Image (cartoon, rainbow, N blue to C red; front, side):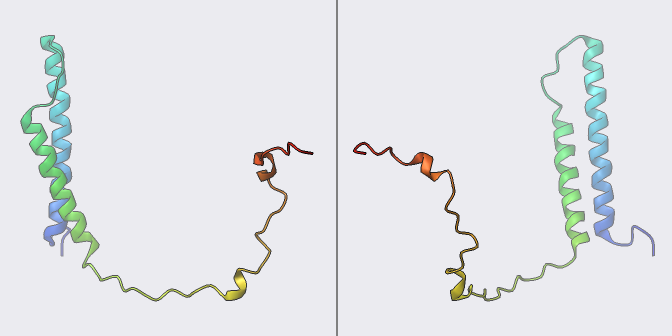
Length: 107
């Protein structure tokens, strides 16, 4: 039993290696552009394809690590007790709402 017995683990490791190579390729491409004296506009298409392939491989491997998907069972929610509405624990009378009230003009 080695680390690469399962295809999912192999796929995840390969995905990380491909992503690391894409990073290295981008860095070396930018260094080559600096030597040539040209401006960096975008990465080459091959590096973009490597990034997509690496991301897909990592996602495939992560889904394999997660195991089987299980259905979410809906459970009925309990309703709050009727007396909860009548509890005065959260009723506040000294709040800033008085400052928002229109001033009394007749008094």
